[in-house]
Amino acid sequence: MADEVFFSMQDIDKDYYMAGEAVHILKKITLSIEEGEYLSVLGPSGSGKSTLMNIIGCLDTPTAGRYVLRGREVDEMDEAELARLRSREIGFIFQNSQLLPRLDARKNVELPLIYAGVPPRERRRRAEAMLERVGLADRMDHLPTQLSGGQQQRVAVARALVGNPSLLLADEPTGALDQKTGAQIMELFRELNDEHRTIIMITHDMHIAAHAHRIVRIIDGEILEGGEARDA
Amino acid sequence: MLKKIRSGFVMLRECVVMSLDNIRGNKVRSFLTLLGIMIGVTAVIALITTVSGVSGSLATSFSSMGAGTLSVSITGSDLKSGVTAEDMAEITALESVDGIVPSVSLNGRVSVGKKVESNVSVSGKNAYYFITNDELIVQGRPLNFIDDDNNTYVCVISQEMVDTFFFGVNPIGETIYISGLPFTVVGRYEEDSGGGVASIFSGSPDILIPYTTAMKINNTAEVSSFTVYLAEGVNSDAAAEEIENLMDKQFDYEDDCFSVTSMSSIEDTMQTMMSMMSSLLAGIASIALVVGGIGIMNMMLTTVTERTTEIGLKKALGAMPRHIQIQFLIESFLLSMIGGLLGVVTGLILSAILCNVLGTSFVLNTGAIILGVGFSAAVGIVFGWAPARKASRLNPIDALRAI
Image (cartoon, rainbow over all chains, first blue to last red; front, side, top):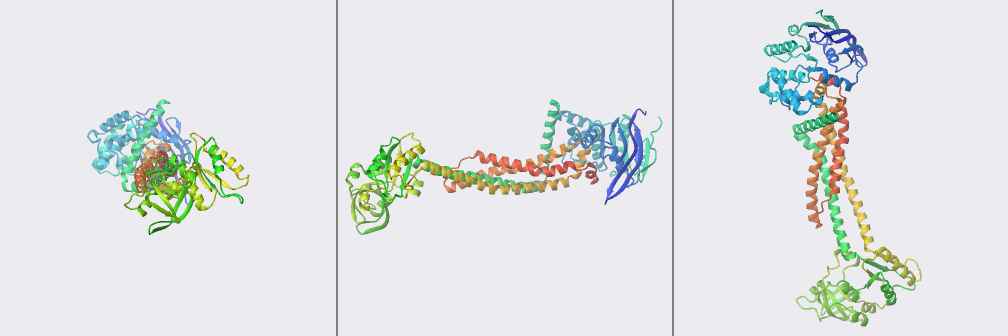
């Protein structure tokens, strides 16, 4: 099912300055992924996997190296361009679902569409459709506190998908869930990938990572294995 | 382009909704913060409205007494201490002058029978005075030209004098002694007509007698103060100049012998003082607005810190820096405006109460309301700017790290 290259990273370095000293978080990362792939980045905490996710998710730019996402050079973009790219291409899922507590499920899902400038009626329609897709048709008016952890994470998935991004980027999506609900979320991811959606999942959990079709191991800012796309 | 504008409006609406939500979410804190603005606006509106109410009623009483008159007071030269009857006739003959009323005052002991009052203000006026102020006399007859020409010993007395000397008695025809000389009371007048403010300048006399009689008692042939009543439609400044020219000639062009003051110029001075006063007070009150603005800035900075994660999340979901900035700016703007509008309401209530207490009329001062609302809007934007900018510049990664 491998089609064209979705993104490619070449010799990506990322340094942070702490107390005047440069800390090399990422060292010469080279990674590419094809459209429709399901990839997991596996690494212990402090390995640099979150930094890698930030760069993949266009939240941050690399110190050195080349990053091309769907034919566009990301490494030279300014903040506004990054914001526009995020809005169009990437759907984020965070560990603790990160829903805005005062908004109901529907409004939370609508949020990315507001920034994309989608008119209200269209927004509502798409949010409701997406909540139905993740199996929460009967929970649209509920506030996050009225939902279970698994339901909250489903809302977060719906929010990530509502803008129809090309990439679903998940950071420890099951980290705060028990095993059963975690498995349900993994099932949802598999379904989404079957629908040909590109998914990258960041985790420290070997079992969770195993749900993906390809595993990239990262330790101390370096990729140990799996950096190259599989041959189809 | 149209689509862009439309999506801009959609954004703005969402920002307003989100901001109101956040303001509601922190009710106590929001209220305390906007209280500063509210107090400032209340002070500005109450002060401006009350001062303009006071100056308005001053102006009304001025114009009721002073419109179309000039008051002339004479210090005189070595040779000539006042104007003579001929001088006054010359002035009266001017086309712009309708008539003049000399004022000759004597302070004297007044007695009826055994009852004695010292320091009664007695003023000599002419018949013209009673013709122009034809509602002055409420009982008996006014003083007339015959009294002027024959310097008769008749007088009209104020209600207060009636109460003092003739309580329960009809005063008309009774005899009253002024400086030991017997006068016949021919009329009674209502002392308040002529305007309250007028009495500040001229003093309200208790007894009016023919000015010729007063001059005779004072043993003088010259009048040192008089009021000119201008003909209808005459410009008071031009008339004042004309009279000054004539009197310069009468005083042989000596300097500083007299002064001609129009009521409208006194009124102008008064108005200028009042508006200076009200802007000074408003200036002091606007310090409260600035302090309120600092309160808003403080709250917004706290809010930005508290909502770091939310800001990072929104950025991750595609919010541009300007989206974040607009949202926080709108929040501080709304906070300040709510405070401002509440301040307008309390300010109007307070000034209505103050005007009532001071006995002046309450006039809705739209200028003050616009100033109050405009100022609070400006405060919201100015003091919200820095926190909003801080929020918009938050690095999404740093913001998300708080997760």
